[in-house]
Image 1 (cartoon, rainbow over the protein chains, first blue to last red):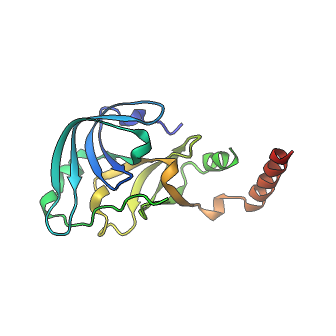
Image 2 (cartoon, each protein chain N blue to C red):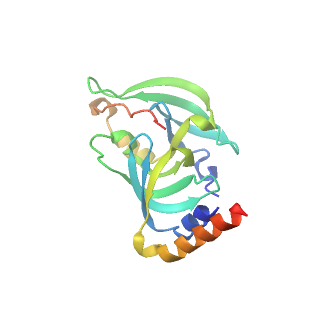
Length: 95
Length: 95
């Protein structure tokens, strides 16, 4: 099984179907890959300004909205100055 | 079910996954489940300059339903065997 167990209590990056990127600590998940994130923030990317982080707090993301869950290397993540990053937001999923 | 088995034989090989949001991710296939959710290790995003979103992500879980293509290492797939197996499976389900 490609389970999510290794990600629990780790800081993860979630990419959603509409292209949003949310980082947070994975508090839990279930068989339908619904995910609970604690201390979560949305990262808003744009070409005009650096990455904006919007605090969201405790978040439950439905499994069917999830595209990808990535484990964040905290040291590598902290080393990046988000205010210098300019990028297009990720495109939404198109079936 | 057949394709699930094929992916299982490809664990620890390098594959490229193209998602339905046009993101291409290369990495080592760590595991796969019945939904063809995929876990990749040591990932690299194609065109990282345009997609810096996953810079600090080393391994990830990809939801099977958002995968468009998976590029397999040809040398690790017995195409003839796969052809025969798919034909056998279709013949079996037709009956």
